[in-house]
Image 1: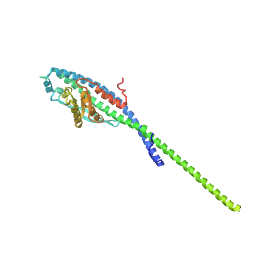
Image 2: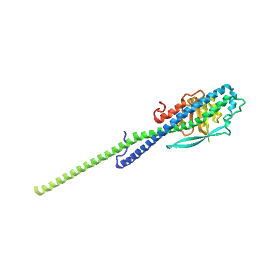
Image 3: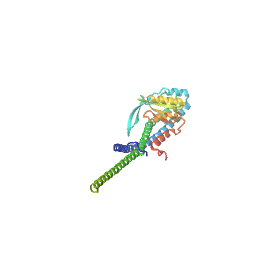
Image 4: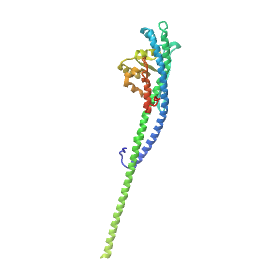
Length: 226
Length: 105
């Protein structure tokens, strides 16, 4: 692992130690977040799968009926019958917060007056097959709408999980080892400096002692030698 | 209040008209991409798109996947399911978990 490019000073080390502490704490928190997100996601994606199966089945049924209806009616009659819808679907979008991921919640409102308005045409010129086709489309509506909500939630959670995991990995495998190595490097460098200054002091002491001895010898020689 | 739209070939989307969903028949890749961007900018919270159309739209769907709205949902067209819709679910599972555990059974 690469160590950071910093000056090996005590102050720098204190700063790095603080950062390491923050990084470790952040790593733990993110990891917890990831675990919880994963738990939520598994539930949601299972639901997503189930809803999709349900919706696709309902839709297949609707298409089947629609094909039959189309077969027994002329294209223009069919077009005319469906041209002006009697009901309008609108969604009220509210948000939900799953582990700080904002996901949409869809609330559906059918704007129609009467129960029979899934048939936007008069019954005189259309076939009974079209009626049953419309009925099955209407039945497919509910699963389709719930699918939309569940699938979007799953997608958003998947994205959040991906980026959280990336962050956890970056902290775990890059940032934290880097800090640790740099701190170790500074600590060693400081110790080395300390040893160097100790030896220097010893050396200086030696030199002073030597000088004192020589001084003394000279004095002694002056006193007794002459 | 947001709206619901569907993009695809005419035969597939026509049945949705009576339900009050806005239909946008589109055939070429250009048309489909343009429609997706248009609807996303407008007030559409949910956009259904047929599997055939989603194939042609290609990358332009990916951009909206990470956004909160709109939800672009792939559904089978009138020709039957190609399994692309289920593939979307599988993809998000793979993206989150890193492995395809959900569908392995």
